[in-house]
Amino acid sequence: MLSSMTGFGAAQAHVDGVSYRTEIRSVNNRYYKSSLRLPESLQRYEAEFDKQLRTRLGRGSIVFNLRVRDENGAADSQINQAALERVAERLAPLAAKFGCARIDLASLLELPGVCESAEPDEAVLEARFAAAAKVVDEAIDKLLKMRAVEGEALLKDLTAQCTEIRSRLAEIQSRAPGVVEEYHKRLLARVQQLVAGTSIELEKDAILREVAIFAERCDINEEIARLASHLDQFAEICRSGQEAGRRLDFLAQEMLREANTIGSKAADAAISRHVVEIKAAIDRMKEQVQNVA
Image (cartoon, rainbow, N blue to C red):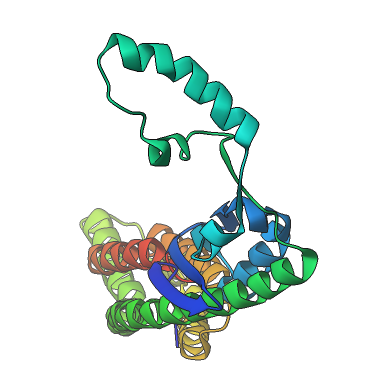
């Protein structure tokens, strides 16, 4: 089945007094492009998280946000007494000037450099990375489910376009032999009109040669066969759904090339109208496959 590149997934967990929450957004992109926001303590694992996203999501523009909150952090925090005293000394005259009865120490603890959290050791960081990676996998699972739902809608639309093209192609194939026959009749009638009342003898062999040249020039059987083959390949790739986006885009380009050739070679208004509709359907397909993973 097809998978869209558009999706969203979020997950959270609480492990050993630490809460983890991640959000992942994905939109279409010809290649893989990521933007990761990580807490400072896990910045060293950016490459690992990026590999996790790339491996499971493939193509797309990925926006990744991971938040980690240590609810035991207050117990592990250390107060920088020297910094606290310096701040208090500077605030005391201002408090007296503006008539403040006291200075709120809790507010002072929130100032930069006053309350410092102890750096977790290597084992703690590894454990937090493992817990975060598990949460990320859960978010990716949800994003992939959303991509699959979007993919079903894309498959339905692409299948409808393929059906439209097949129908138009069948009409062209049915019409093509009559184009040469009608040209033969028109040419014969025109020549007969020109030689009527003259002593010029009608050369049927010359007319047949001209018709043969016309038939060769407007022969579109090969183009019809190639376009039908491309449609078969397109449908097969849609069913397989594995890394389909680039291959579908390539086939859509090839189908458009064959349709243009049919339109330029077939000297017939009815066929030209069918070609216009085929090209319109291919354009719709090209637009849709840009979002196929």
